[in-house]
Length: 78
Image (cartoon, rainbow, N blue to C red; front, side, top):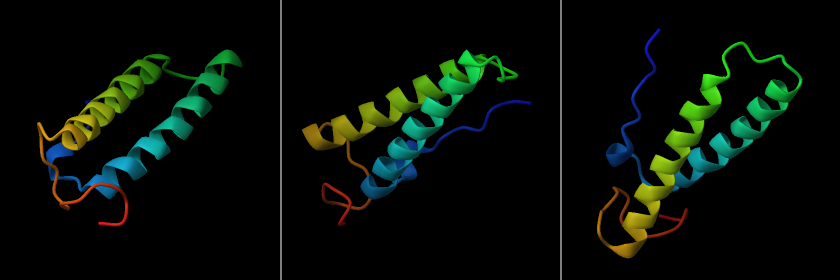
């Protein structure tokens, strides 16, 4: 089954920050389950780590002014 694509450019700054926090928690859980040998597909860790890096890069580019995300301002309050 192919993985779904993330449309980062359509996400607001708050959504990106929220998704980053969710992915960090999910990555922790996947690493824990992998250490206990309960993970069916260990490649999901790699995919999640790369998606997390994509989100962090987009957020950093927005804060630097090289890329804009919808929602205007910086931070979760906009």
